[in-house]
Length: 613
Image (cartoon, rainbow, N blue to C red; front, top):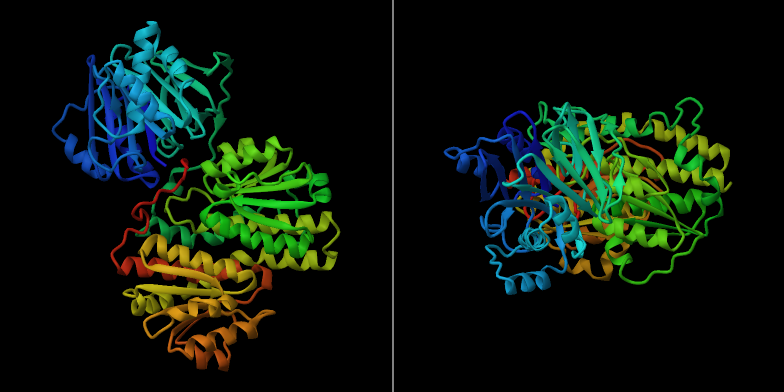
């Protein structure tokens, strides 16, 4: 959840580190810090708050040096204050370390180190790790990289780390396990980061470290990689396809609004090359090369967290309808701890925007050990999930910086829809006519999303009336039940208003007790196979004087009589309506949050990529 950046090269490290930290703030913004090597001095500066606070603090400090490490923190162990901010140092102040992850056995290690005379200045698990490296280095009189290798063998948990030493200023040592770390290379200079955002403007050549690998980069331009067991690894250099513009706001005030309006393009890009708009044929290599798994599977299990879990719920409806196969949608965090029944006849679909979600990765490992076939859906090339899966598909949404997922969600729906249609074709449970009909409808979705975005001003007006509400209720049925859950999550995430999403028929089994004049209810009432049932639910709300915001794709007299506000979206095939109903839900939460003075891109207590449990 934290962000790491490091630099070793010919230029001043400070501006590279600080600008890199700003680009990593979406991963954590409780505190920030840097360590710089300058004339055999190790200078460490860190402050609670955002990177701007660190910049103020360092304005009068010595910021020279061509080697340095930086960190933006999302607090796990210890509150967000100066002492707990990274980097952390050993007792002598000649070693510094930044860390993303959790050291699970830190308490035991800390106790042992204190018995050996080490003293600690923070409450973090990370500080234990730098003291452990220091202790190993002293006891074994070995190199820094050897000390890191030996220390990490004693560690249980997840980590991405970068270590520098005042006594060895010509190198940086980095390692990872279950937490991302990538190295950028540019003519003998090195950039390290939790992702590529801190250095994409400098280089497109990168090396993604794999689990339990240690990298040493040196000022002479050398980069060597070994495993924790000491085996040498030949670095594989990849070329980045991302561009800097994807990571700028452009003309928009916030990343979230920019990313909402990018959805026509992100869905189109996720379809491009996969769905032929003329023949409606789908071609996805990850499916075509593994047809036997999809044809012979007894069950599919979708593993995800947060918004990706809601996409998985829509995927469940799609796969069961088109593929006629049982589907279970599981929170990855719960799945891995309950000894689930997994067989080699199961197909596991793992969904994650970042491709680094810790719980999803652990669940994938369990599924693979038990013989299941894993199909990964993620947005980041080279991510852990993309490398761990047996096959998969990228969403091609482009960089998503806003913490609350928008375009990544609809891109995930795109891949899940393509997958469901192909599974139906492979299993011969979807007629050729329906396959073509749905493919044709899906090819129109980017244009329909663009049309839907025209409701922007109307949704803003509705938001003005409800920005001071304390609670919201979201109702949907069928394909739009998951959208009720997603709408409620978006509002909670960025406006801090309590909201609940329910299957509309379940309202009368409890939540109806909450309805009064102060409780706004968002009802997704698209004209579909269960439209009449949703109308009945709206009548139940109005009978108790509740306020109704209706999202419809066809105006009718009964809707006009029941709803206080109507948001009309274009029509499409029923299974594809979540693409369009998601837009007003995203806009409503955005505008309410803005009117409440909330930071929509960096909501409190949240971070973009959940790389810890």
